[in-house]
Image 1 (cartoon, helix red, strand yellow):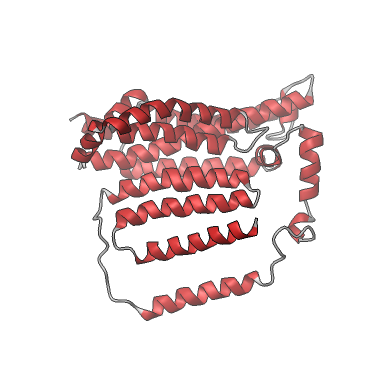
Image 2 (cartoon, helix red, strand yellow):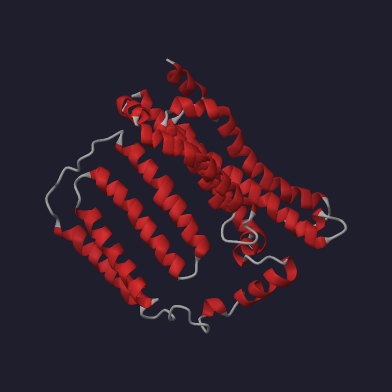
Length: 148
Length: 179
């Protein structure tokens, strides 16, 4: 399948359009991530959209190009640290004297602030874990294809 | 409102039939993406924007890419076997039983349905009063059901780890890519 990837690289229109689109896809992913409290969306959707931007880059250019942008090690770290952030928020609220994942204790002055902080952190963990997982799955499939 | 829902459902049914009949797997993979996009439209009409969002991003986007990735590892044409009656009968009976089951379910959007009686009013009031969040889905996912969401993230991470262990052997795979 390597030759088809090369053919894709020679397609000027696809390349130019993808280059123009990718920043907007990533920006939209960030918007969905941080606007999830107020509009539709949240960590999961944002993670998938964010990963889709990179997957598009990997499809239009090549897996090696994508690996130069997001190395395998970063993906591995993202998968693990996303879950760690989520669980860490829970442990942090335990240590601050609340129940597991009780966000109210995260801010000693204003319970509402603590709630919002907890939700934002947890969504960040979800987004990180999901986008890194999607990329890991794509890397695994595409890497197998190029190894053949 | 109603005609567009029926139109989408009709398109869904047609797409499903075409996917089942197609032997050219590349087109079938693209059609599954269209199927997801149509169901995302249906979810939007049902005011479930968060679900529609996920369906469009995962179903139409990522899983289509993964299907194409899998296709490049196998053949592009499905080998047509003999049409067998028994599997068709089993599938038909199961589908019929599912349809029969929906007859007992409350009507779509019925406010007296059990699912709208138990916890939902508390959630709807709480998202506004307790959290001050306009998006109830986020309040439920991140806080009321924070435990479940933690479990979901763990499931996704486990899936990624499983695929990493099965298909890509980490550093060894990178070395193979460098060759």
